[in-house]
Image 1 (cartoon, helix red, strand yellow):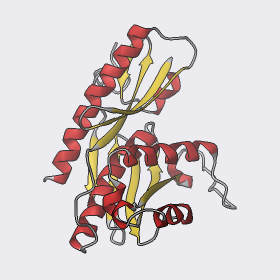
Image 2 (image 1 turned 90 degrees about the horizontal axis):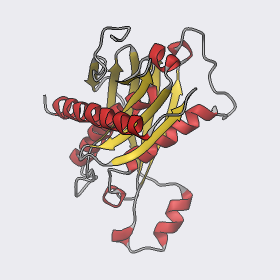
Image 3 (image 1 turned 120 degrees about the vertical axis):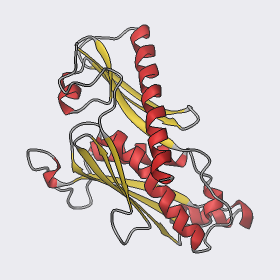
Image 4 (image 1 turned 180 degrees about the horizontal axis):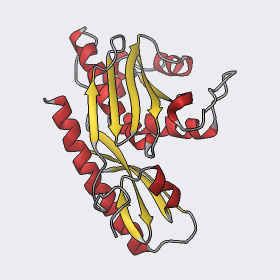
Length: 246
């Protein structure tokens, strides 16, 4: 059965990366998965959190490491009904979950010892949401991080390149009994099973988040979803590479 937007089951939405989207952040990328648009920025600070500074003090200088953390937010106009801003330092549970996912995903593909005693800040702000905001954030944040590290290298902050792999993420799900790739909001809302998969460019898994909404799913369906996600992430990794090597 054709999908509501005419895509094949294994077809991504239109994917676009616009690097250097803003002027002030060393790394900034507007990532678009169809109508989902996320601004991903990366900046560095010549300091680390107090807990890490204390740990580093007990290590030899060449064993000290930096840190990387991520924040995620949806702008009020990113959804049809206005989404209130987080206030009073309180972040809603969904945002906390997603920013932790982004941080884990990026920390898995970088050697923080090569960053020095610095903090890398990743910010993902959803400008418009139509499903897959977390997967778009992970995928775009990698490019923003790359550009930030490139500026650090040019500024003499890095002796060695710290990235050991690339990372991308995509959603998959079962809609009307059919496994499909890269769900938009309409499909995500109707999905019998939905899953988010994060993988490296070498094909290694970082995270798999899967949930049955109404009916339990079989092992064969799980395998089909994983294979579908892996194929989608290979496509995303190729597009990331093309964006970095125009």
